[in-house]
Structures are given as structure tokens and as C-alpha cells.
Length: 198
Ligand SMILES: NC(=O)c1ccc[n+]([C@@H]2O[C@H](COP(=O)([O-])OP(=O)(O)OC[C@H]3O[C@@H](n4cnc5c(N)ncnc54)[C@H](OP(=O)(O)O)[C@@H]3O)[C@@H](O)[C@H]2O)c1
Image (tube, rainbow, N blue to C red):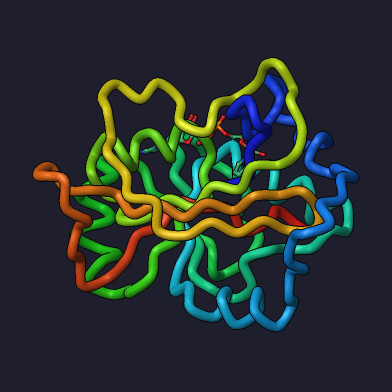
């Protein structure tokens, strides 16, 4: 996901207007659209919390598009939300059972879009193999945290760092297993952001 330097993924009321930053880092890389497209192809399905889904629907209604293409998109919710396309499926209940029992046997690369509640739930339950964290060049002071109410330490291994001309720094971490080694799952569950409608 993308966060402000002080660790927030949205303002308290859910707004992400601050994500349009205007920095310039001369030594940074340029984001290659071909690379992004190829990377998105490696994702087999998306999982997101209901509030993130509601943001995605709002963006779509504003004409900013649907960022998840025709990939299966699983929305976690206990509510009755509008289902705008066939690729969207709702789930409510035990996230570990859902990911390990239903998703892992079927999908190789599972991308957790967020938000903060789902990211924390996913890490607490030991479901994530990788965390992709982009830091935007801005401080917003308050908001929804990247990992809401994480109740224990999670050891990570820094696997990749990239800095872009836009001033964004992209960090990729592998989640370490209980004994400190990177987990060796045959498939992959990632927490990260596929930009919401841009
Ligand atoms: N900056 C970024 O990269 C980024 C990325 C993603 C999202 N965001 C922003 O983050 C905000 C949303 O984050 P958030 O932490 O408030 O919410 P969230 O994680 O998107 O959604 C949390 C909600 O999902 C449902 N849920 C979670 N686990 C469930 C389970 N096991 N079974 C059934 N339902 C479950 C519950 O809602 P119900 O009440 O529906 O049951 C819960 O309140 C939005 O503003 C979004 O725009 C930003």
C-alpha cells in the first residue's frame, strides 16, 4: 500500500486526496508503465476490506476506473454491499480459513489491497508472505494506519528498495517465519496497493 511518511493510508474520514504529491527526486527512477502492466499480470486475485471496496466504487463512479481488471476480487464484509461486476465475491468469517482453505489451493499470487484493518488481520494471522510499502513524500498528521492495532512484533526481511523521480520510495519486505527465516510458501500472499483508480 502507499502511505504518508507518518504511516497513514487515508485520512480519518477515508480521503486519499493527499496522494497527489508533487515532489521531484532527481536521482530517482521513472515508473515504467510496461513494467507495471507486466507486474499486474502476475497477480492472480485480490482481497480487500469493505471500506477499501467502497473507496474503489467511489473512484469508479467518479470516472477513475476499476483498478482490478477482470481478476477475481474478494471483498470482506458482514454487510450487504452492491456487487457491481461478476468478478466480485463477498466473504464474511474466518480469514485464515478463507485464504488457506479456499484461495491458496487455487491462486498462486494473492494480493491484499488493504485497508489497515485487513492488513493487520492478515499479518496477525500469519497469512502474508510479503509486504509492499510505498512511502509518499508527505506528512498528514493523523489518519488510518497502514496496520491498524497490530498486537505483536512481526520480523521482516528487507528484500528491495526503489526510489522514484516522484519522490516515492518503494519498499518490499518478506515476512519472516517464527524462527526468523523468510517463509517458504509455494504460493504468495502480498499486502500492497494497486493504486485505487489512477
Ligand atoms: N493508501 C493506500 O494505499 C490504501 C490502500 C487501501 C485502502 N486505503 C484506504 O483505507 C481506508 C479503508 O481502510 P480501513 O482500515 O478503514 O478498512 P478496510 O480494511 O478496507 O475494511 C475493514 C472492514 O472490512 C470488513 N472485514 C474485515 N475483515 C473481515 C472478515 N474477516 N469478515 C467479514 N468482514 C471483514 C469489516 O467491515 P464490515 O462492516 O463491512 O463487516 C471491516 O470493518 C479507505 O479510506 C481506503 O481508501 C488506502
